[in-house]
Length: 225
Image: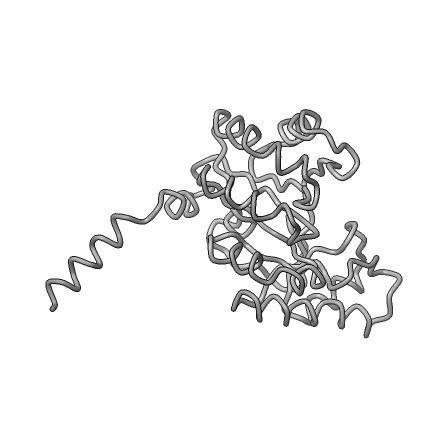
């Protein structure tokens, strides 16, 4: 029985997909880039997950609570495939105009929904539209969340064109960059196979936002990158 157990363990270790190895890239030694997707899960997210899995790439998803309610299985798949999950509020409002209690409700309800769907409680928060201030940051910090913005946005929601979205990502790509996209935009999902292949040619390792921190933990109430 011991031999069989050891053999099974060995087979399991040797059969791990390459994606699991690539996800542990040392970003101090290799050129890393984080692709992030807001506003899902959407009807297009499952297709995106297939692309990411095929290309052995990791991403970060900032989920809207309403969408998690509609598609908890998709959120579960994102976490199960090793992607990072963040909180993007329940109904996607501009938070600086909201009262403290409303901001907290938007965040806490989404935390609960994501935990229920994935078994994990996010440590990252991204304010809708990027609208934030010191008060919003402080309220997120009270919920044990770090605020994650971006180094470049594709404006894919406005472009709605595969070639233009691809060009935007390649223009914004830089070491330790955090690129904002939306898995609610079908053209973004359609563009991803070519985007990932080109980024790989340029030497990028596609990792989650936490992986960019080189082993350091996200700090609640702090803004990244």
